[in-house]
Length: 156
Image (cartoon, rainbow, N blue to C red; front, side, top):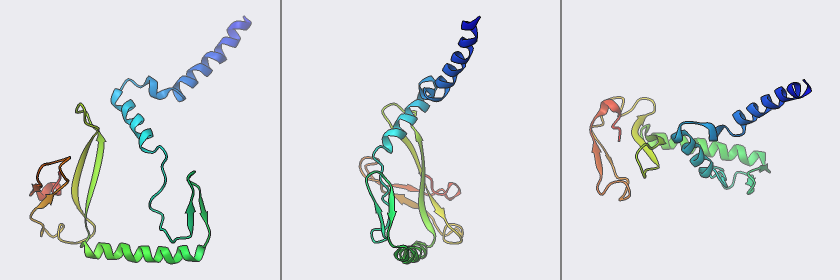
């Protein structure tokens, strides 16, 4: 009787442990498990690269940040906002965007889709773009790819 009472909490603790700590190993979808593994590898030894050099933020290897000069940061943020607005004006609100997923094709890591995105009003939303030429380099294509289908945002 005592062993039956002790066995129930041990069994429940084991089930909880299996569903939390060893969740990846129990997934029946090999693509999901592979994707999780690649995510861990991608962010191994991660250090942010988007911290402005003269912002007064010092980032050490462990990833923690030390803010040393609040006023300098405010000035740097204003400069960054000015640069962002200028970038939008220079590009007339047109930007290339992408999304990806783990590939189902053997020996291929990811499937990537790239398309042209209009932020606000501009050439794309006004129908002024006839084609987009993508040059991704020899690892992707030997020559550039031209897309002319505006209805799918010139998706590659």
